[in-house]
Length: 72
Image 1 (cartoon, rainbow, N blue to C red):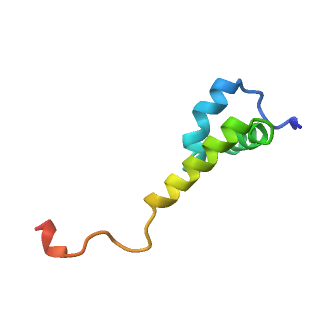
Image 2 (cartoon, rainbow, N blue to C red):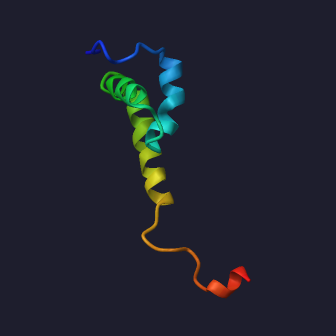
């Protein structure tokens, strides 16, 4: 179900937005359009889950610098 505030975008455009969506880099309108699309498109929903998992691997709780002197 598409609301009046959700832009109508083609499948290809929405598929191209999945990476930005996974990174939370879409506008509110794009996010709504992508999430609306994901409810009806299983291939894109699967890809979105894979991308969100990958983004989760990129975020760490701590610094990756084990030794501050390595930067000097």
